[in-house]
Amino acid sequence: MSSLYAAKLKESGHDVSILARGPRLEQIRRDGIVLEDEGGGRRSVVPVPAVDGLGPCGRHDLILVVMRKDQVGSVLPALAAHRATPSVLFMMNNAAGPDEFIAAVGRERVLLGFPGAGGAREGGVVRYSLTSSKLQLTTIGELDGAVTPRIQALAEVLSGAGCPTVVSRDMDAWLKTTPRSSCPSPGRSISPATTIGWPRTKRA
Image (spheres, rainbow, N blue to C red):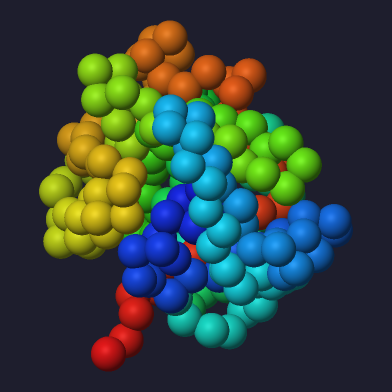
């Protein structure tokens, strides 16, 4: 789902880059991110800068990590080395708790979330559907449940990008207890093991 969120944020006017490797990196650099809405069939092509690494320098407002929990270990060392960005949002099915993330990047930087979309990448096309508000919106939260200015701002950014978002006051418990039947089907979700998108607020 990182391709979807990166493209949606880019379309809404934010400065976004996406990390990818191998054929997917070259595909995005050549063709952009190609989205197809399964609900209406609308297809869009969004040019998003793609990079192959996350260096220790370069400050961004947010790093958005959208991948399967069993794949996140492959990116934690790079996230730990990159200290300039103050917020890292881990969006994934995670009943094990955030201790691994906290140990890698620091408690003050960790945000938790779950995507409100499902889909699959077929060739170079990301076919997706946003989940019904009756089932599951994009849900995010601070570790301590506080409704902070940064979590409110992030919810507004994501909602403004066409991904309706709500803030949870206990995101860790939400991830551990929410039935997966109310969330996008894991069989339909995209799990790019090496993809990270980081939105940056566009400067005037």
